[in-house]
Image (tube, rainbow, N blue to C red; front, side):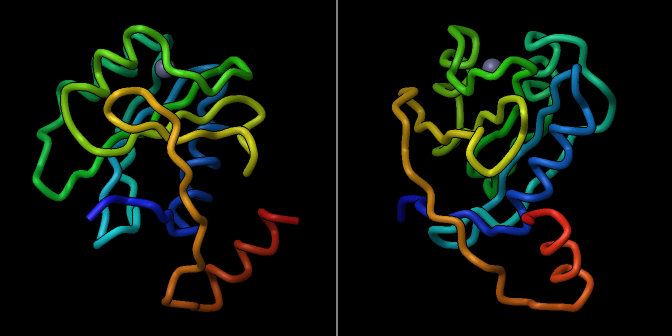
Length: 140
Ligand SMILES: [Zn+2]
């Protein structure tokens, strides 16, 4: 099954982590259920460059539940670098790049070959009050 959706909560977490890492880059691993990205595992530590963000990804134990990766660019260009393309090719189905200013329109998703893919943002099914408050604060 190919991945074509991302849970809104997971995306918010990614955007927040990217924003709070700025001007450093952040990296994480994506997990999916079915066709939807539901979870992001954020790597501890701070990163000073794209190279070190990717190095940290390489050192993660990649489980079968991992469907891809996410990392941020401190520039405003969410396009894969040559190093990114080499990395995308190594594992996973979908890879996100988030660029400054880290909002809902400054990220893109790519497949292994580095071709852009569209992901639909979907509401998570567990609507607890904490996450809905967080939601309003973040998206308005
Ligand atoms: Zn990159």
